[in-house]
Image 1 (tube, rainbow, N blue to C red):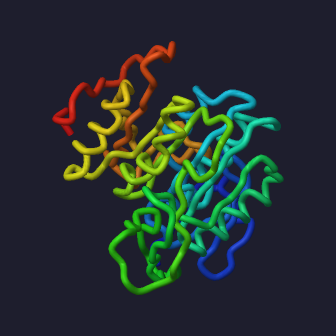
Image 2 (spheres, rainbow, N blue to C red):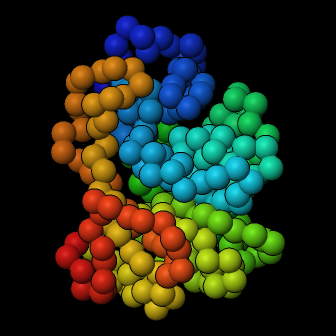
Length: 275
């Protein structure tokens, strides 16, 4: 297993098997030490993809209702929950059972009371999906597990955003490894009714045109957000960049009537937009 030790101010609070606990930017975080990206970033920097959190939390306000589709262990969920505070609510979805258990543990560790944690996938229709068995003690990219084509594993509920029957929905984050269009399709009624701001991963070249077209057809304005995984101003003050120039490829999506002004992001105007 790789050495994921961090600088002196990244004190280990607990290590047991494949899980570790450290005090991180958004609270105490339990994480999988063998995870190549989420776990490694928390270990070295005390945060994961902080540039994404910064953008998300600029638009979240107290009292908002938000959805975190593909919540993983809660790196963004915790900060989102604090942004909407007591009267707001976050619905967090994670399909991998072990990862979902760690998500729930992180919610409890930080005394966060406004997150509803769902052990389920989100998709176009309600039903079930197969999640393969994963050995979390071996190095891997556990947040990069793409579902939908496995025949062996654990059957997990697949739900839809529309099935939540939300009276309000202000923001949806979607990071589901290629199933983004399916999740949107299963939330079409909610999106049409409430016009939430969307923050959607779009890193699959072959699926990008369909995803962009779906959003443009609903009169959303789309902008690329391409943050580097390494943040020089990270929580642990670690100046060692182990991720090089690696970026996340996301879209910041605004309903046509939104008054939010977007600067320094490239607008996406067609499904053929440069990837």
